[in-house]
Every structure is written in C-alpha cells, then in structure tokens.
Image (cartoon, rainbow, N blue to C red; front, side):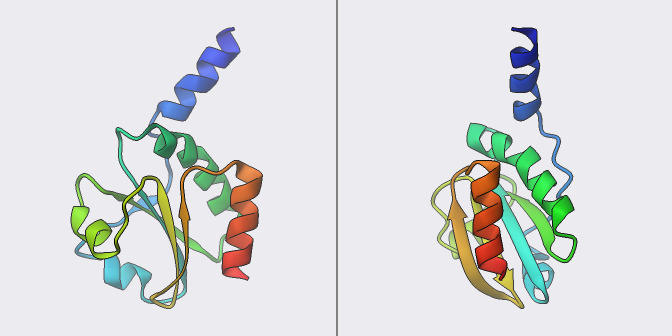
Length: 119
C-alpha cells in the first residue's frame, strides 16, 4: 500500500522539467522548429498526471521543444487558440498548429500520437 501511496503523491506533485512559456513570449517560442506546448493548470488532476509522462517523452525527443503554459497565470493564449479543456497539448511546426491532443493519454498512446503528429 505504501508504494501506491508514493506513486499517487509523485503524480500530483508539480515536478515538470518543461520550460514555462508566457502569453508575451508565446509567438516567438513557437515560431520556428517543432514545439509541443502543454496547456495546463495546477488545480487540474489530469494535468498533474500528464507532467511526468511529458518529461519522459521530452527526454526521448531532443529535436522537439516542449513547453508548459500555466493557463491560470497566462489565459490570453488559451482563449486565442480556443482551448476549452485541460490538459491540451498543441503541436506546432514553424508556427503552424499541426495537432491538438486533449486529455491525459497513457504514455504509449501519447508517444504514438506525437510520433504521428511530428512525422
């Protein structure tokens, strides 16, 4: 039972290694290359579950830039992009949206979906 309790604690702790992006620097941060932006909030349990999986995927895809946007602190970009559910991952290629992933997928499904989006 202790291991399960520890696992639950680590999935709710904010431990993401993703760089933060703000409304002010969003356009520049997504303008070039391939970028995945995690739109999430501290109060969102599925967002907290997704964080360690994104850290894992980001370490496996060094050519892709992974960013996190706190939608409570930075709501303008979320509104502008019409994001209504959290977590939402938006995949950009040279400033253009190529995919949106809504919700927390299992790690294998997340890897497959991103591979399709980035391929």
